[in-house]
Image (cartoon, rainbow over all chains, first blue to last red; front, top):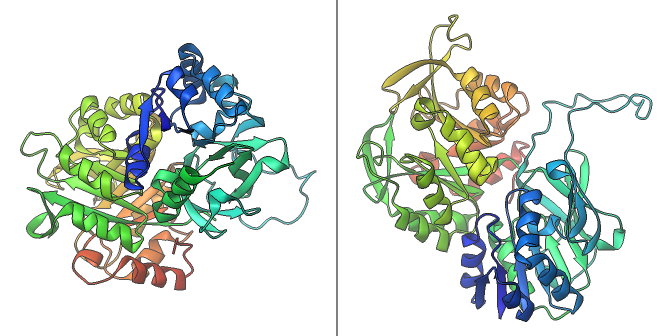
Length: 220
Length: 258
């Protein structure tokens, strides 16, 4: 059975409805034992990394998730559930995360102009400063084929809402990337049986649903 | 590249989508869930449902409708019109909406913005704002005043100052509706849109006045700066599909999701 992890970090309704629409039987649970027994795990989340990690540690879910990934259970992280897979996040003054994917989570910074020493070239008018959060539909370029992406063309738009972005330290962890106002970040992560999307697969229309259904059938 | 969003607005009255000019003479157009699902299939980027009579009737938003929409529509949608307190926000979000929109309530109780942002995250809270063109004055230096109750009641608050305040309080987005342009089909009110886009660092949705695809391209261009354009009668009544609108926008150089 697929388990949708409920750790009180925002709203699970949309992910659950999307899975139901696809006919994916799933249980919604915050019980570490249920997570340990799961055939596959969907790990969503909105909100802040700090409080999410606090809840995961306090409930024993953090351990259950890392153990499950270690023993090969397929896991899909979404949004905060994607960021938490890395070693640490800059959010909330610095938070240690699950460390399933090496690297860190950084904040979008557009409040400083480029250093003229480092970037002496002529600059075109940058226009209004890019907004944070990065909210809306942006394109994701796939770096290589993967069962998760079957039937979805590279360059497809997905729906993002986030102020922090994953920065894995190993290039092999980046399955898809996105450019927001010059900051290129990892929008899809891959680490063996764990995959994750920074965008909201459940709110990204048909392509998002396709990724969810691909995950439900994936046998890494 | 981040796409500019095309948002379809569905005003719901007594369970039916309705459309009027300047909030008068409404006529029924269809079932909100069926219409929302149809626009989803057409490729709309986002939907907005306003329960336009909930406030007047002193009741909460029709949550069953929100649940039905959430089962059919897998893109972000926001709900507004009858939010009375934090619990209403929670109910609407748990029913499957991505965002809630507050308008008059936030004017009366600005702390609903910060309370909502703290409880659910900034990205969930949309400030809806109706702006009326007035003479510039010390109290209203932008020349646009915030009005409530569908434009029937003035507040004395400057629209640009209110947008800034809402951002400080934690709003994640501003939906800026021009009372002057609404229903006229002569184009969005560019001046106030430009002013608000320059004043805040959060996304701005332009609303009111769309009568042709080039109106969307104009308000979304860099010199005005809106992040999203809201339409209603263009698609409900005038026969434009989401796809045909987006094709026109793309022709005009607007980055859109096709």
